[in-house]
Image (cartoon, rainbow, N blue to C red; front, side, top):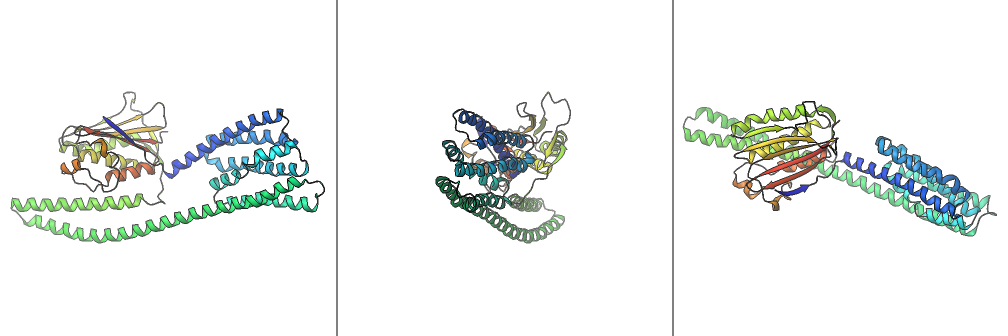
Length: 429
């Protein structure tokens, strides 16, 4: 089969976990790198007494913070502060050594660590966007306090070069803080604008759907009355067409409302533990009658190693159920003969994830169309020729649902042979 993978954007929760893993690696590598570099610098005589005292402590704290974030991601704020507070104190001490104990070692210490000073602010604004500005200004105030103390009480012992370096730090660091604060403010404004725009769109569609639904109910009622009165076979066939058209219009409205709801930036995932094995059997029982009415085989396939013990999962059950239902419905819609199969397996290399597959022997599609099928309102030519009704929103909704629970999606298809949709979701417990 011609293969193509369509990776779905991860949800906010998955993005958070990705950031946690990144910080974990950065802190672990940073701790190890700092320790190794300090050995070389110490042996080369480029360490001040302050470096000898602080560097082993900060290296160890970086490493510990990385491990904390990896094993306890919910402690990321505590872990970051555990590293950044000693780092901030170390920076103040480095400048003090340059001011009052100028030497090749102190200048080297300031030069080698100075380029990393602004990273404290960057990390704070990423992990603590609400309190980052306040903590950053407190840290920056330490430089100004040191300048005042040096100017009024320790002016005799300070070096001119050290004073110039401190002044440069005092001038540059507020710029970093203001710039990062402005970026965060813009981000918050953009998020608020997106939410407002989505709300306006949702309200408009809700009003429009309400009006259309009222008219549709009137039409359906009138069609039902006609159906009771008309006896002629030709007239009844026309009534059936009207009923089918009204039902399809209701489905279109539901799809549009669902797509709009999934575009909401404030949409949250409701995780809860549930029996995945039971859910899969429920899906089979729910769709088997329709498959049999179409003359199709519909089977559920579980691994031979799955002896009947329940697969317990912790994710949004309602959304996962909706994803599977939409994929099965889509497979039945475009399969005129043959079979539809629902399958699931847990990968031994990724024991906390499950891969669910819906495959069919339907009309399939050409490889060149596979990058278009997830776009809203898109229907392929061979789909139109099959006379299957649809709004072109089904797979777009599925993609957004998979994204919302942090999953990935893959589709394989061959024209006139069939299609296979595969989703992988974390959450097996």
